[in-house]
Image 1 (cartoon, rainbow, N blue to C red):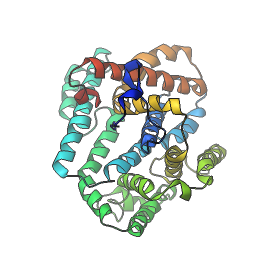
Image 2: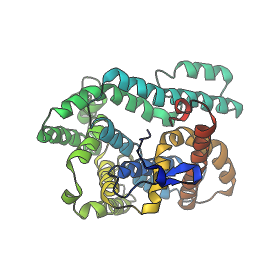
Image 3: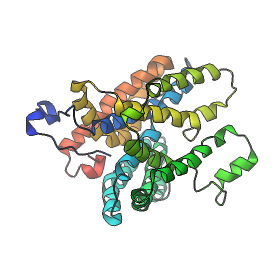
Image 4: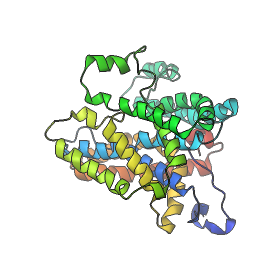
Length: 355
């Protein structure tokens, strides 16, 4: 998930040869989006299951994060890989080595740790290993299976986008956007349209739209076309959600549904905000490094939470209002250190952590 930049050698930062990202670099915002999305993923997974104090904060945190977590990763993937035509075999070969192989390795590591902790039997682990090609054996790795499916379509979709008009892309996104309203409609007919193979919108409803949306926002939406409203939009949406959440007017499952309109609106706002709002110059070098290691952080973060942080913090029964930010930040630091260390010490680390 890392993106390479070309930098002058004179800009290297002493520690770990951190790279100074120039203010005029037009691509730094991609690192900002990827880093923010990674932090949001950590936030959604950070609540300690057994902690009761402050549970009202979980859905609020989740809603703020769900619009920036996997949705932004899908969008930034589309903004990158759909922006130019891709040769099928070389493209897929690279994704297998940099995404699929690390996922398989860390799935096995996670299963071994579960066995050592007594949460899984060794014979069950073997059964789960055999099932890795067919379904995620670590629940948080569902994203990799979905994004790889999108990657299989990327050479076809990128060719279509390169030869189509902007209005055609907008019509496609408009139709896809209509499906984001379906979760609000509690109807058997609507559910049949999206939930079963053969339904009218079954093959149209889902995550591919996020990738095309990311491509569209990168190619066609510039700062001049973005109004100040896009900056305040996320906060307005968050305030509205916090206002309606206690009333249960809108089902809580809908508010936290990544395929529902509120979360997507929030993701669009995050994307454009990070794309167009200037970043402090010195911060860019750290954002670049974090973004380069974001996929590895994604792979190891649940091990850090479940095996290190949760056992330490669980007896303290810290309220979620404090625990969620604390665990998110701690996980980010520890996971980054692990991935950075593997990248520096272990040969062929790109096949292990994608760096």
